Length: 446
Image (cartoon, rainbow, N blue to C red; front, side, top):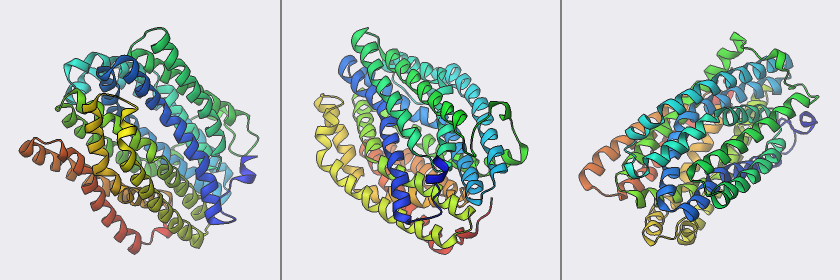
């Protein structure tokens, strides 16, 4: 069913990318509702202290799971290449190796998150006032790592073969469950941040289970058979070679964001709540861009696998243009309506002022962030994930952390935390522009 309608190697380029990206966008929208529902309900029922505890966990969560998510992206590139080439044997081996990797990673993720949460939060300079709630939220979240990790693994497989619809359906169900449980646990039963964390874990497990059932029941060539789940060394090497740079890239970005969060924490609970609220808004606003970049990676992977180089080049140009224009339109809207958007999370005037200041520093530069992400997506689909990894390491980690270490120490101003993002987006975009124009990425091989 999905295979007949999904291949991106034929038909209108723009139509294929947009129709594939639309369900991804809606799916990402509902996925974003997980933590946002936590923040809205926690902020309004439990107050700024609890909201700060939930918000401060975001960068750390992404840092620990970003590596595994990046590896799943690499696995998706390998699967998309074999799917585009019609090599169903190696595609099947790649799928079952990816699932085996996800199961192993879930165990490691759970152990790290449950055992080391307090130590890591202290390294982030988390204030003692919110430490207890932060530890509770983080430990419960990572106790349910199986749901999050395997959902991302399963979605990576489905999207690699062109099925972006079923993950959407499953996320709608699980997101509604998340919101209902949030209200029931926090508003009804009077639970604290542990209620928000438990609701998120349950909903993630539901979405993973629904994806698993789909892969087990499909009659297409990418059907999952539990008896075949094992590591195939040759395919594992390909997945790691493609996924390791993406995983490191995610971890690098998240590490830099943890450093930023640590600096934000030093300005107190109100700063944590205000910047945390803006981060949720930015996450929502950037979902269409993320969706297009995910579609771009699959499009490039399938078409290069099929040997359609001109189509891959034309698709990359279309995707980059759309993401840049769309990002700037979204940035302008967030700039204008920032006060109302921040107030939805926290009615404290000081929190609103901090969130608005952050928004009106960053949003008009969204086109730079979109350009960096879209070129990165093209290069990942072409098998050159090491290039965006290197660019992010230099600009989004080394430069970002160095800038903060120097300027915050000198000025003691939170404004430096706002401006570090547009600065590093600009540097990475210039670098990607020249590489994309000069490099022969179309002839990359697995």
